[in-house]
Each structure stands twice: as C-alpha cells, then as structure tokens.
Length: 511
Image (cartoon, rainbow, N blue to C red):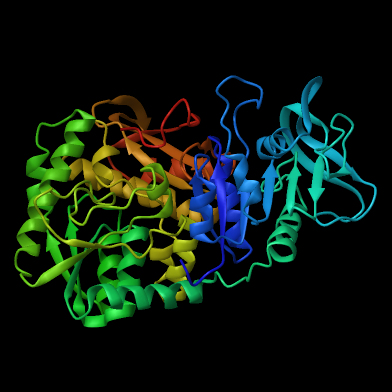
C-alpha cells in the first residue's frame, strides 16, 4: 500500500488490535496489524508514519508477558501506546507500573488539568480495563491526565514523539476517543487522510490491470458479499476479461439465486455462467445427517461442478478470490501461494487446479468491502446481504437434507427475514435466520385438528466480526408476528422457538 501513509498497529495478543486498525481507517488513514516481534529494521523498511501499541490480555509484570524491541522507540516514528501498550512504554522507558490494589474497569472520569498534544483540558468519560497502573512517567514525559485510581492516565513526550493512554480510545464507550486518535494521526504523525473508497478502487484497478495484463480471469461466485464485491472490482478493472461461475446448489435462500443473476448479468453486465445443479447436490446429500459429512459432500460437489465449468474456459490463468484482511491476519499474514488450495467462500477447491490468485480485497475489513461494493454500484440487497454459510441451508436443516425440507425452511426463513426487514432492524443484526429441526416432530392443535409437524428455531445475533456474538433482543411483538406467520403460512411447521444462546458458548450456526 505504498500509495497511502501507513500506521502499524502492534498486536499484543488481544482482540483490540483489529478494532484499533479499523478506527485508524475510519480516520481515512491506512493501517496494518503487525506482531510484537517486529524489529526496528523491519519498521524502517516499511516506512510507516506512525505506530500504535495495542492493548493486551496480560500484565506487563507477568512472566512471559509480550514485549517489544526497545529500539522501536528510536526509529523516529511516532508511537502511541494504548492500555497495555501505554504500560509497556512506561516500563521500557524508565517509568513505573505498579499494582495499586485498585484496578479500573468500565466508564471512568479522566481529568486533564491543561490542554496537551492529545487532549483538551477538562474532564471526559473514558473506558478503562486494567489492574496495573502507571504511577510514574518515564524521564522526559509529562503526566497529562489522571483518574481517581491512576496517577498517570496519559503520558506524553513531544520531544520523542512517544505517547501513552491508559484507557481505550478505540471503543465507543470512550465518546471522544476518535478525536484523540485523529490528533495523534494528523497532528503528530502528519498522516494524510487519503484512505477512501474511491482511492482504494483506483489503486486496486491499477494493480489488477498490471497483474493480469490481457489474460482471461474466472471467479467462483458464492452469492456472498466478499466474492460479489471482488468480482465487481475486477470487472471494473478489466471488463470482459472476467467470467463468473455461479453454482446454484438448490440450498440458497428464497430469491437469492435470481438476485445474483440479476445483479451480475443485467445490472453489472458481467459474463455469468449459471450452473443449475440442485438435483446433483441433493443426490450427494441423500442419507447424510452428520454435519461435517454434509459440509464435505457439498464442498466436494461444488468442486466437481466448478471443475466441469472451469475446464471449458481453457485460456483462464487467474482466479478471483474474496480474501479479506481478517483472513490474512488469522493465517499469520503469510503471502498466499500462487496455486489455489481453498476458497473460503465456497468450501474448498482442489489443490491441483492451478490458477494465479487475484485478491483485490485482501487489505480490507468487512465494513470497507461493503462500502466499496456500494461505490461500484452493486445493489443494496447484494452489498448488505447477511453472512451465509458456504453449505447454505444444508447446515440449517438438522437431519437429512431433501428438497421438501429445503423448501420448507426456505419459506420459514423468508418470513423471518421479511419481518425483521419490515421492523427496520436489518443493519442492527449481524445474522437472522431459521433452523429446521427436520428429525424432530412436535404435537400441536390447529383449529380442531391435531398436528404433528416440525419445529423451527429462530436465530438472531448481534456482532461486529462473528468472533463473538450476543443473541439479539428482538421485540416481543416482532417475535409474535414471526411465529404466527410461519405457523399459519408454512404447512408442516407447527412450533417456533427462539434461540437465546450467545457465542461463546454456542456458535452462530447450529451445524
């Protein structure tokens, strides 16, 4: 990303690093997450305009606590330590971090007696999460703010351009946190706010054209956001050189396959091969009830369908893959091999298919991908589609998958999503869907008749990244409408339950 000023976020083992990186990007400055083992030489080679040390799960005094080469402070690059990162700054540069016996957790009042580089004078609410406290700033540092329990809640050295804050400015519970981050980025680092969706599209367009030249490209569309935006971006760059392959497995949500075809063939004008393979997928799932076996059967069938179609495009050298930045982080940040081994959207392509990868989204978080999609003109129903498992409804049918059961679940799921949409809750909920307990029957009464139908479970969760999730507190009247409509409109379902399990201990999907 040489065209953009870069801020490196040093990860000390907590989930704060990703949130900090996203907040930096929200200020229109490009950020990358790096391990705490990064060396001063590596930093100089990457020429960042700033470094942020993230929070961490450990105490700086615990044996084996993550640390950092002290030479980083001598690179001339501005440094901001947050929480654990601030304590590490203090400890490594000669200050004192002690266990005062009084930790701080949650909303806390910060007092700044005078304006400083990072703060304006006065009091403000901040979010704390620490037991150790900085009790003495290093030589040459000013204690710019304090709280009732932390004598040095903010430390600053304008001469060294090294700073630390004991609280978490990156969380929404610190109302003026983004203001502080912008002061560090713009005033201290002199970073240019050029990381915008338009500039990302322009840069990736240039990189894609340089990589593929005049060669043919194929993209395996899953119907999800990532592959859709990746395809649209590549098409924006090279137009008719791209062919998309959409394998319709018969396990998509109601109207979804039609939306994919409409969005790409008609709206975007992209060449799309629509493979209708419902019967072959259902045949592969006959008699299969174990969740992992289902996934393998669906993944294997997809491979065979994709191979058969891709084999007919003999001159294709490149494969588009919707890899996102969190995928890169979780894989250790290693560069991907030139031959494809797996596709996170579609459940695995074979190792012996040799394409060179085109990954135009590998620097982006999910929210950035959606904004790029909007900028490229993709329809809202595609850009804001909720995450959907690669095996589709196959892993939301608990038991054997049949066409009748898939149709039953499709109808119930459509009602759930329609009612949530009508309630205006689409953007507040990470995922909402129905699960069919196909191997369970329950007794009910409808009119004067006894029924013996399937139960449906409604699942709705809130989340930022799917790593953790909380069950959504849907209004009772909304749940009542969902239940009434499903039972009255979907013949074969006579009971509706609501899942109130968070992740952890549960998972978002049932299988």
